[in-house]
Length: 293
Image 1 (cartoon, rainbow, N blue to C red):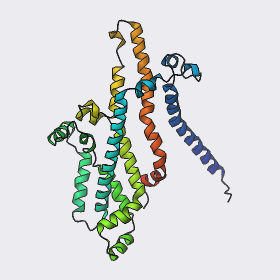
Image 2: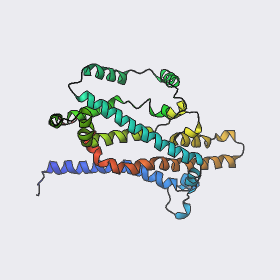
Image 3: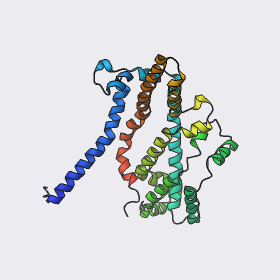
Image 4: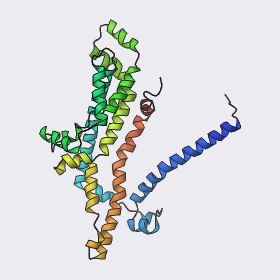
């Protein structure tokens, strides 16, 4: 059906198209630049900028990173940390959100008050470190996974989503003799894919990009995630030229730093770029939880 737009409507559509085009370019162009730069000879990149001549391209940065045993070990650790953290976060969030969405829960207001209190007030780094230490979690994988697994905002999102599940489904299941556990796992969870996938994506991305907790709690280099390994590689290749008497050596160190920098960005971002299309169909519905009444 053809819809005739007024002049003002056409102007607004044109402005929207221009804005969206600009937004896409702002996102895409830096990504394209980093990918191309990761394959270029740093001397060419620093002197002439981006070049599309094959002779100016190099895979030395990727070879240096991917042949480093610490990189492969860090990649495996990062996948494990992010996956385990996402699973634990989602399970805690949906279980707590489902319980808090039920009006029959006694003390629901008290629980929500305690949860909300932790959003605004925290003990800080030192008490958290002492708590992790006293629990015997230092230098273990659980020091990275457990402390941040309970996310109050995720619990609130889950609670809001479960409040939108028709009560008639639960009532009909109760009439048929289903227990609360059976209702939750057989009826509610299959209907909760949007919120589950969105929470999992948020948790996975957050943990994947994190290195601070690992830097604080993990001393064993075999337990370091990818981001901490990349940080160590970049720091090792960033030497103050004033400390090196040989100018050729200083130039070589700068060249190696440029090679590794862009290749490291691509390597660390690639899993997230590959994963997002599989979550995209649930993403829009999940992030809109609570926006429509």
